[in-house]
Structure formats: structure tokens, C-alpha cells
Amino acid sequence: MMRQTGVALITVLVVVAIISGIASSVILEQQFAIRRTENLLHGDQGILYLFALETWGKEVLIADVKESAESDHLEENWSKVIPGVVIEGGSVSGKIDDMQGLFNLNSLLDEEGKLSDTAMQQFKCLLREYAGSTISPDHIAGATKDWMDPDQDVEADGAEDLDYLSRDPGYRSAGQHFVSASELLLIDGMSYEAWQNIRPFVTAYAAPKEEDSYINVNTAPLELLKCLNSDEDSQSIASDIVQYRDDTAPFESGAELLAFIKQSGATDATLKKWRIDVKSSYFLLTSAVNIGDLSLGMRHLLLRDQESGGVKVVMRSFGDEW
Image (cartoon, rainbow, N blue to C red; front, side, top):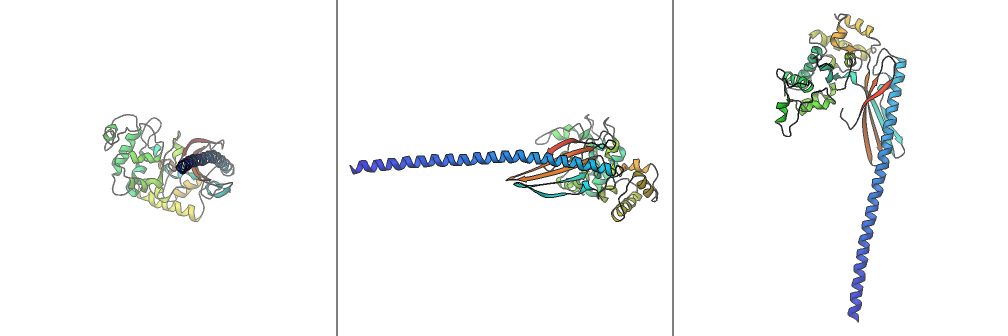
């Protein structure tokens, strides 16, 4: 009898253990389901907040062109960073950067595939002065042109598909304009160190009009302005421009900029020759939201029409690279 009682007790303990295991598994699965649902809800909320920030960016740029259509500079409202604004369960933040304060890689070739000698000279200058001594500026410049053009004709000191297909893994040249400036990492001869050095001065966006790639002297860094022209005098003019805009006031019109650089010996053709201006059409809104355990970031390329003042979204991307 005692033996049967012992067997029954063991059986009960085994059943209890099995039930406990099943219950634990069910509870754990329920917790995972709750967390997944929570993340989905927070993800949907986060994306809505990002689009709300996009609307804010558009409205700020529209208001700016109404106040001052002749120029854009870093003292205007659009350039002010939104600090972390508290929302239910997290925070949102955002900032707008002037894309025409950087060198547009796509300005090297126009829509017809014709090379811009001025843009190429400026690009080589950036590579030579800031990319570092581990790369060949002429080779990277030639390979960059080959990367963009649709043919397989290798430029002098350039690179085409045959140079890339032999890699592991192999790939082909783009045969089109840059979608992201980070594509420079794929260019033959470019190192990660060189990319990090040149990264603060370059961008990539599709600009149908040549003027949309002109560099805004009110927002461009001194390093870029020093590469506007191969003449040694242009470096001193660049320094004068930066000193005036930072210490006195930003340039309010193209006529004011022209009058200023004429004092340094420039001519009427200099603005076009150097591809410079004081107003911008392309801006990059970087938005971020932290909600619950999720962190989301988006980049919005905004195009503002200088005549109508309207703003439209050209491209969106998640992440930190453009």
C-alpha cells in the first residue's frame, strides 16, 4: 500500500512539474507577445511623429522664404536645432541643414552626362587638401566620373566594371548619379579614412538645374570655399567672405556678394565661374524620436521652390547616412 502511495505521489509531482513548465512557457510567450505589440504600436507612433516633424520642417522653410527670399543663412529660424521635446513616453528632436552649403557630387556631370570642369576642379581640391595622403586625388576623381557615366570607357586614371567585378564580392559601377554620398566608399582607390576626412564637405542629391548645386557662401565651411577656384587669390577671398559673414553679417543678396568679392579683384563672371550663391533650394531635415524602447531616425530631402515658396519632399531614408 505504501508503495502505491509513493508512486501516486511521484506521478502527481511529475504532473505538477509539467503543468508548471507549460504555464511558464505560456506566460513567457505572452510577455513576448505583449512586447511585440508594444514595439509595433511605438513604431507606428514614432513614424507618425517623424512625419509630423517633416511637416514642421516644410512650414519653417515656407515661412523663411516669405520673410527673406533673397538669401539663406545660419541666423534664420530654419537653422535652429529642435532640442529634445518631451512627448508621452519619450521625446522628439530635429534639425535642418543646408545641402547647398556642401559640394554636390552629382554636379560633376550634368543630366546629359557632360563633365563640369569647374566642379571637377573643386572636387579634386577637396580630395587633395582634406582626404589625406593615402589616396590619389586624380585617380579617385577619374574613377568617380566613371562611376557615374553610363559607358564602360575608362577615363585616364579611372575605373569601370572590370575593376570592381574582380573584388569579393564583385559589383558594377552605378552608371548614374549618386543616390548617397557614402557611395564614395565604393569608388576604386577610396579608403575609409579618406572618406571620413572628406565626409563633412560633400553631399549628393539630384539637381535638375545647375544653379541648384551652386554653393551657398553663407552656410558653406571655409574649407570648401577655399576650393572654389584653383587661383591662389581665391583662398584669400574665401577667408574674407567667411570673416565678413561671421563677424559682420551674412550676405543678403547676390548683388551684395558680387560687390564684396569685386573688392578682391573678382569680376562679374566670378559668381557663375565659382558656382556660388547666397540662397538655397535643397535642405536636409534630420528627425529623431525616442519612444518606449524604440529609437527611430529619418532623413528628409526637401526642395523649396524659390519662386513659389512651396516645399516638397524629394526623398526619405531611415538611418544616419545620406
